[in-house]
Length: 155
Image 1 (spheres, rainbow, N blue to C red):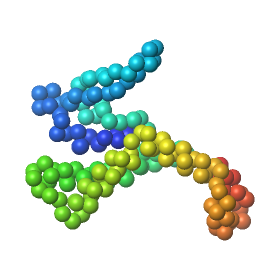
Image 2 (image 1 turned 45 degrees about the vertical axis):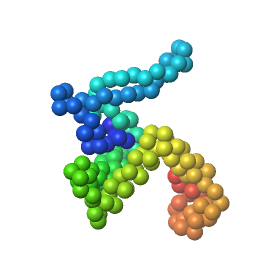
Image 3 (image 1 turned 135 degrees about the horizontal axis):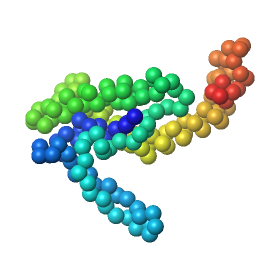
Image 4 (image 1 turned 90 degrees about the vertical axis):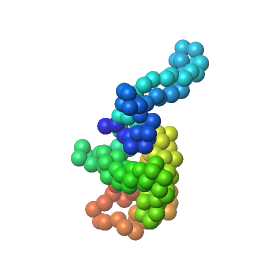
């Protein structure tokens, strides 16, 4: 599934009325020469600002694997779209929409592929090799039929 780290609603002001697309600038590296260059293409909103399965969590079911995109990001983006609509009409959002816009702006810094991959790696390390404090918390909560270590429980 395409997980959009740049939400489609956010790209709308840059979409042309003529072809329904926007201009994407992408920095690439030539694999043979290692020289960087800028690729410029016209793309639809569904064709840019995404990575396949970016927010998918390992070990989740088919039914729940896209919940971060569908539920969490969906909620953040839906309210932010309303706030953005007000902003584009010269209205400063107040109350919940003001908070929704701030939450959305913060999410843009955290939902990038680089940040998500880093977060997943850090969490994997914490789960696979828990420190003494986390293991002690597991020990305190452990049921008799659970493995003796948190690492065993995760596996």
